[in-house]
Length: 430
Image (cartoon, rainbow, N blue to C red; front, top):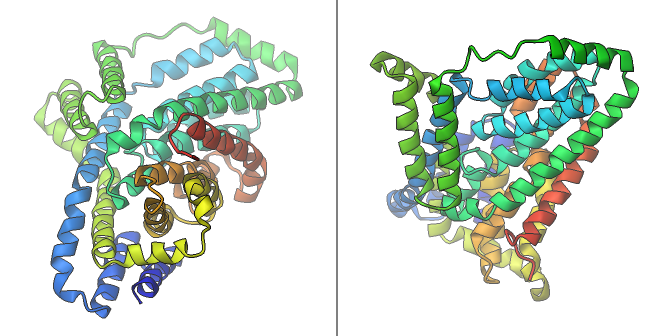
């Protein structure tokens, strides 16, 4: 009976979100409450909701301060010197320009916000693509691969945050083991970008390339925009990432302290600090609310026994000999599911059941969270990705045309990501 109620809860939740009858925040709270009351658990709702909130609170705080920190860095134009340097180093060569696009896209994707990343990337490179005659779909494909890899993997990027919160995981434990496959996949994306750029170089008139190279060579290196704050911000960001990799402290503590330092240094006036927080709160608050809602959702689903009952039902049809392959299975099915489903429906609806099933074979839930995040490159080119529509508007292309161009390359990069995750032990198959 509990399994039936559990699957009904997930089905109703996903239907409400995907059909846009309710916002994800309202649906993720209302659905389990209604079904829990119907199952006779109304008297324990308060306790179950608090249990869930206590577990996801650190993740919500991490997300809030990570978004605020990178918001300050974007306002300070931390990556502008990098984009200008990339353009100079390209010497007008389309292959180098595409590689440079990938490098900048991977960096700005650390912000975690797709719309912001796409706007920065297009403002830096789209005029160059149009000037040389490089297909803007190349820029769009590179941008979506970078966003799906970096923002989709980092625990403050939104997608992985959902998995961490819904499975009640430690952010540091999740992320440290994903750094190696994420870095290797980034190299794969840079390689794909070079191949795309080489193909564009063949179709562009050599005279156009040489003319643009001459224009770049004549441009004066502009250092006027660089101040001591530019170097300070770069050093602070590098230090933050180094401390994060070595696990010196919890992610939430690192980002809170880094944000305070960045805010005081870049905006010493009290009134400016308040404006910065207000400006970037619009990006952070909706996702923080969703994480807290996920805590209530999983608190109710877990404490009522629905999640365990659903996992037991699934295990009854899975051969015991294949149980150790559940992380790999999760990574593979994350590609089509992430493409067609919203992140809310996938991470809050599908992933918890897979994690509970994996637990019966001694597989930690954190591996399922890592495997589930791998599908984010496919999600970034899917119709449920809201930032994608912004990107298509910027490059002036329609969805079908873009998907036909990008799908083979995104699939290639996604398969590489799965292979790297297996090889580095981020997800196990033994």
